Length: 219
Ligand SMILES: NC(=O)c1ccc[n+]([C@@H]2O[C@H](COP(=O)([O-])OP(=O)(O)OC[C@H]3O[C@@H](n4cnc5c(N)ncnc54)[C@H](O)[C@@H]3O)[C@@H](O)[C@H]2O)c1
Image 1 (cartoon, rainbow, N blue to C red):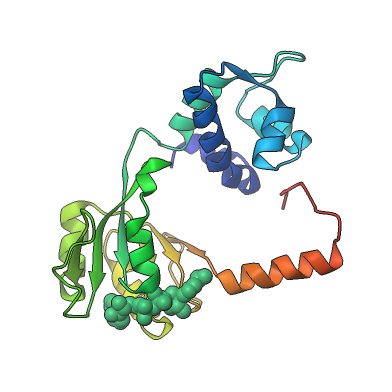
Image 2: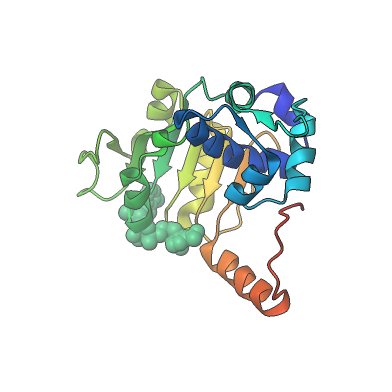
């Protein structure tokens, strides 16, 4: 990640890919400028938050004009390192893993699942799309060969920490953990946990306790 992104608040940084995707679509449709109200409607973030986010990037929209789409797009591309391909390894080619392999990440951004790993004999050596499935025995070797920086964990929770320790010892910088296991990593490695059950519970809680939708995603 570039240094620029480090200086902006994390809540703002999390919204960048959202803005980027929408602006790319606008750009492809030939649009040259966009107002914060239009952006707000499309990405469902309130316009005051958008204006504040954009002020961190030095993108100051003009009243009655809005933001220049080309300028924002080139800024986001640079900030999100979109010119650089981030290679990802997927560990665990089961229900969830296969779904991710079948989804083309490159369509929206510059991350690509480059290699996948499993221990099941019937999966190893059977590519899905253009992604080879390697045996876990070759984890460190393949990660090094392919210069992999990020790993997605879609294995049973019971083996998640052991695999994480191996990833930490190799060159992995970030882990996207889909298992319910809470994993320990050293501060040099960033880990994000994604748990659909927790997200659903939280959605239901908000529906019950905050009947009017909260538009701002500020943390
Ligand atoms: N985060 C979410 O929202 C969410 C949703 C569904 C499932 N999950 C979790 O994701 C994980 C995968 O779920 P699933 O339904 O795809 O399971 P699955 O059983 O279909 O797939 C698991 C895969 O991991 C492989 N595996 C087992 N041990 C391994 C090891 N030591 N090294 C490498 N691969 C190994 C298995 O061979 C299998 O292919 C589980 O931990 C599950 O709880 C998370």
